[in-house]
Image (cartoon, rainbow, N blue to C red; front, top):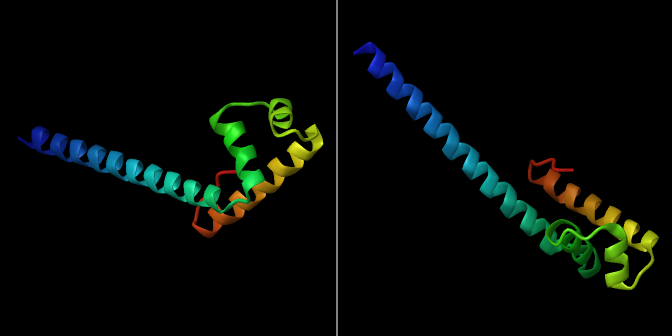
Length: 94
């Protein structure tokens, strides 16, 4: 009886941990989407091309018709802005 009783607590704890982890991930995704929406159009474009469409730096520069250096600058500014917004919401992704 004790074994079954303690096993049920273990299962409930594991289930609770899984629910908390899913909720945390859901909240992180929400905060990230919100932060991306706040970016200026060109910075948002760089982030979407890099992380959602998997373009490399040079491909992004060609696609946006800018120099590789301008792409790197936009990307750096976008990451800084995202990080600042996310830190305000308690997350540190970058």
